[in-house]
Length: 252
Ligand code: ADP
Ligand code: MG
Image (cartoon, rainbow, N blue to C red; front, top):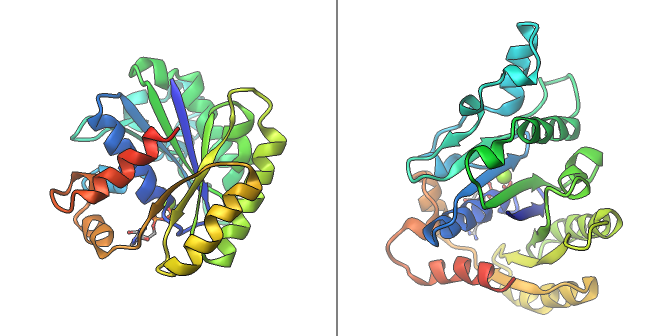
């Protein structure tokens, strides 16, 4: 199973990129599962016709209230099959004011593993969409536990996004013990300051010793598609968007 993780600062475009990669891989014939690991739980929305799907932690809490454990969870209640056939999961978050978001991600991924979610649905590509503002134990768990093997960092030319990407890169270098786990590259999701981005981001990738994989321009088409609840790779024109996303996958 190919295991891809998308990390980056909140709002940088992780879910948009993860969803387009999922849609592109699905179109290439793969059985894809996208796992949102952000308490915002909106990772998979554009693949679910604009709807929010139930979250693993919510379902887990429901079972705990009934005095049951995670094995009482029905997989079909937490793994949503999108109309196009992509499997979608949202880890969810803790109840506001109680608990820790990172710890929640850890619990949700453990539940998926224990319930054998990947083999049950014959998944051959898993994409984890992980919040990376804070690289605490919970948010780095997909790396540490070997869930994430091919790790992409998303940033723009904005300082805070590069700062977050740099912190994540350090966590990856520290935690990726297995030989097949590591940084797969940097994807620049433009915040419209293209001159700066072209000057700075490839150099940043070089300093981290990782490939600069793709440049995704800022585009109103992405937001229009988001409002319609679908990824850009499903829109008919403009074709060059599809190439951008398929290109990301080919440059492994
Ligand atoms: P994250 O998952 O990192 O928090 P999102 O993928 O939800 O970020 O993106 C945040 C917002 O930015 C969304 O409204 C999305 O449509 C928009 N967005 C993402 N990438 C682009 C882009 N390349 N051009 C224009 N808007 C974008
Ligand atoms: Mg997101």
